[in-house]
Structures are given as C-alpha cells and as structure tokens.
Length: 88
Length: 132
Image (cartoon, rainbow over all chains, first blue to last red; front, side, top):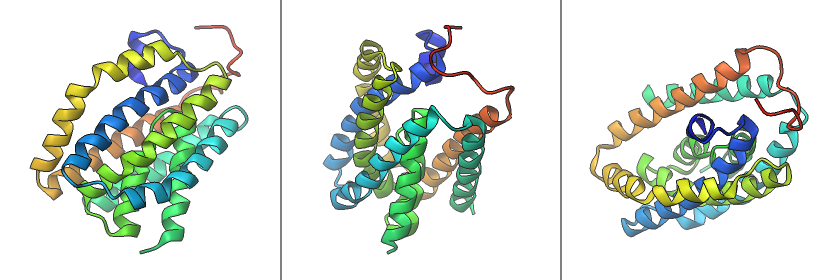
C-alpha cells in the first residue's frame, strides 16, 4: 500500500484494490513455499476463508459509506490487543 | 478449539482487508493461534490460504469501485518471489519466540498506521473526487 501510493502515485483507495490483487500472487507463493515445509493446515485455512470473504464484501461496501476514521480506530485497538497477547 | 471465535475474527479480518487493502493475516494469525492451538509458524502459513481468498475477492470488489490497477499489481506480484522464498526459509529457521515478537512488531506497525488514519483531519470525500 504505502509503496503503491509513494512510488506508483496511486490514490489511497486506488492502492487498496491494487494492493489486494498483488497480495493474491504473493500469498499463493507463500502457501506453496510453506506447504513444502508441511506448515499449512489447509482444512483450517479453508474454514476461515468463507467468513473472511463475507467480511471483505461487507468491508468494501462499508468503506464507501461509513466514517473510515472510526473503523480505523477500532482495528488499531484490536491490533494493539493482539500484539500485547503475543508479547506477554 | 473455539470455532465461533475463529469465524468471528475471520469476518473482522476480511473487513479490515477489504477496507484497508491488506490480506487480513494480521488478524487471522492470532485467531488461529488462540482458537485453533496452532503454532505461530503454522498459523502464519495457514492464514495465507484465506489471504488468497480475501485478496481475490477484495480486488474484484475494489475493481467495481475503479480502485484497481491490475498492471501495477502484476508487477508487484512478479517482483515478490525472491522475497517470499527468503521469508519462508527464515520463518522456518528462527525460533517460535522470535517469530512471535516479529509478528507483534508488525501488528504494532499496522496499529500505528490505522491510528494515524483515525486521528488525521476531516473525512476524505468519495472515490469520485478529483485526483490529488
């Protein structure tokens, strides 16, 4: 995202879609690499995919309608909690 | 194992992915560790399966809003294999604790970016606005 905005001159929302498309290729390579080490639990990965896709559809729809700042604040707090969980 | 908790966080991670343009892994991974008892390494590897789905659907949805430049995405994707290979090997070589701390640092980085979005000036107008 920051790379696309700074180097490729994308607007922020434009970088959102472009970043997601690049992530598909990068994640596919990552899955292949980690699968070679036997680290991928495909059943659990496929279990979280449907609700995640539902979340994406909700997120992209809401992005156009709800205050982005409020949503960003909620997710920032969620990630702070997640980091604290890992550190302690 | 807590499937309901996992599915709820997966939905939230998808929302984050769709709105912010990330794959959601930053939330999938802790959810897989906490709710499915996977190790940090297994969770990071497994999360990528869902990240593929989030990226594909998110890009398709953003394309509908004219927020996708496919050519630039392919360029970034084609530049990534060496970095991905180094990342996969490094993740398998380092200790679980190091991996956890690196992931925590990544989460804090994302949190800071989101906090900046939350705290900055007035709302951005709709995507139909004129380019900056």
